Image (cartoon, rainbow over all chains, first blue to last red; front, side):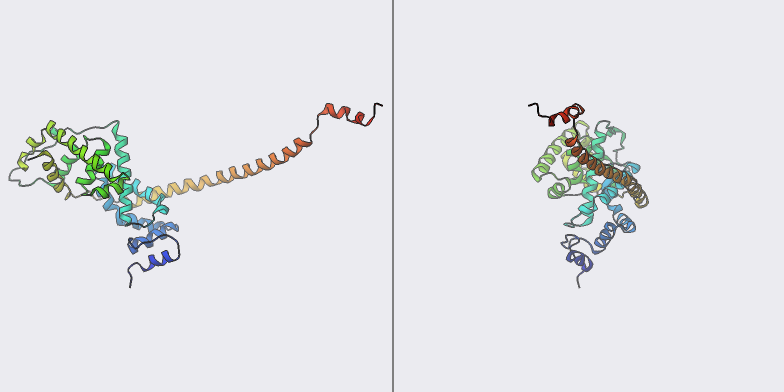
Length: 208
Length: 87
């Protein structure tokens, strides 16, 4: 028996386009939320908020800002739920919105951007430490990437933190693949210069 | 080691980072509730605007006909004499 039976039924009834890529549970909740069932949307929020928070954390390491970005993502998702065509997983659609919300936040912050000096971050190796802690690594990477402009930062953030391919970045941002490749190339060049200027290699030579 | 290689190594480690747990479900539903109430309170205004527009178009239609049949008072003064043939 098919896993997506009720979703297929909705499709057959012509209520929405369906290609089998949406989880059955999600599909039921989406349809219920579209019919005005707020509890169904709350279930969707609970199901996906962790994934979205993970992504939003890449845009701001301030937990209150991150929370605000997650909240904005779900409110935007609710307002445009009708436009969800079920051409891909619901989580992917939400991540697309979260990327847009995060990018918009960066653009707003561009004018009054406050860069954390890398000297303020403790880059020295702890005693008997073989590997850097994930939190520390993320903090350093976040501060380095913050020195790029928003578009280049977005490409490398999705590439490095989210392990996204060029195709995935293009889908999330709405840019062309060639555009993403070009931005990634430029960003890496800039990053190399920044690393030299900030003497990252010397500071992290214990990692080599 | 190349700076980019170091950054890529950092990125691999950074991916394992544990993100702080948050629960926004209540806040999201609260914000959606506010947005919905705002849209509901906006509805009567839309109705009022719609009805006013309909009333205005009816008045315009009627006034157009009234304008067509409206005559100049000066013309009205000489109108009875038009029936008298000067010859």
